[in-house]
Length: 378
Image (cartoon, rainbow, N blue to C red; front, side, top):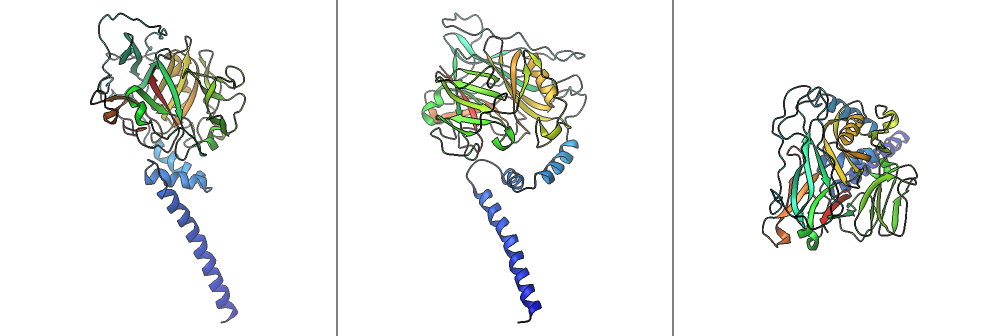
């Protein structure tokens, strides 16, 4: 064989290896367990293999051409749909348990008139001792994107307890908690919602089972759960820290609301500070969780939100300290749960807070790829 042919054969062999190895790696990623779609798995594989910049450009172009429209009216009325067996009590009810005062109704943005029911907290059952565990509402994000309704839920921590569950892929590592709500807890399940960015993008850590994945960083926004299931949100090292009573910590970026006000710099997305995936140049689906002045927990999410308008939404809802959770429609969910057959945990089904939420209402009843939070009756 001539020298030229030997060189060409070697080049061909190397080329085949270069092509085959990524194909094998991508194939393994697509075959990995979990509930991500093939396109979601492919995008994450591309990001993990140095092609995040190209993905960002494509996503940025797509979302720039599919932003929440300006003006108009929502295509559905303000309505909170409760799952089976979770209709909240109506009319006067004698309350026999201690409860947490909830914030006042959520003000609509300046310059627009409220829709019927907009910003009004509606009880979403079931009740505990005659008191509602959760209240929900829908509200527009600003006076420009008037066809968008974002969702808010207030949760009473005196009537509920929280758990953090790891996902199959995120945060990685081995954990005793399952990646779904276990069957023996489902009759007490009230709700579940998404966590934060992947740890490589969150700039923080994940603590569960007495061990840490990533690094718990001082100054980071942190969702913390104690042994009795009580949650709070704060800045690590200032408002919250590791104690013998701490069972779970999830960090994600920095606080977006502090002292009841949006923090400075939310319109500056240099180096992807508030979301590398799409940047802060476009308004996308975003989510957040916070603690109010009385210790109540508020979750908010929806379309048409930048970091600044998300913080303003959470501030209007009554937040004192808030952290951004995941962004983009593929990754966020808030679902209420209840059994369609009383007493049968296998019949528990989920109902989406926002009907346009991309992920199904039954998310978190099967193994999920991402970590999440679950809320139960005390």
